[in-house]
Amino acid sequence: MRVMIIMIWLASTLFQVGHYVESAQQAQQIMTQVEEMPSLDVPAEVEIVPEDDEYSELVGDWFLTMAYLDGEYQYFDEDSDFTEYLLFNEDRTVELYEYSGGVQTLSAEMDVEYDGIYFSFIYDSDTLPSTVSYEEYMVASVYDDEMTVALMFYDEDEYYAGSYTLFFEKQ
Image 1 (cartoon, rainbow, N blue to C red):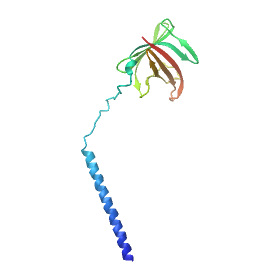
Image 2 (image 1 turned 180 degrees about the vertical axis):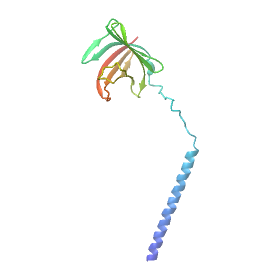
Image 3 (image 1 turned 30 degrees about the horizontal axis):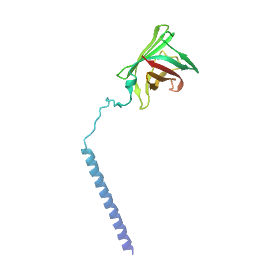
Image 4 (image 1 turned 45 degrees about the vertical axis):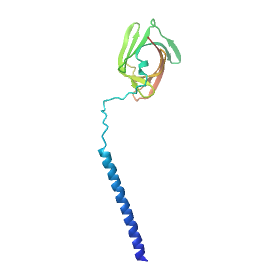
């Protein structure tokens, strides 16, 4: 009886070893096939931009017409003391210009990013108030020649510190 148990155990062990060897050979074959496949090298500096992100709707000059600031609407036109312009360029950059009393107080150029839903750009400067580390402009909607932008403020710890809603009209 002992001999029969030892033979069954030995047969079972040999079967498991055989199965292991067969699995190892199959894995080695798969690895060889993978190594022989042509590589698909994509240079890191190539930016793949979806063609249907509708950035072309933004290209052009935009003039600030209204802002929702601290619970109140403020209206702007060419005669206002404060004016703001955005110029979206075809190379996915935006230029921001602000004027106060007819004097230019701000001129900045930033890269426009697209996250699959929104276009946004970040203004980061030492001229911002001490409580604001940077401002993020996010294009919330574009309809005909009107654009709504959420202007969000962040502190030095990158915590959200508040926002304004800006309304622009295309020139």
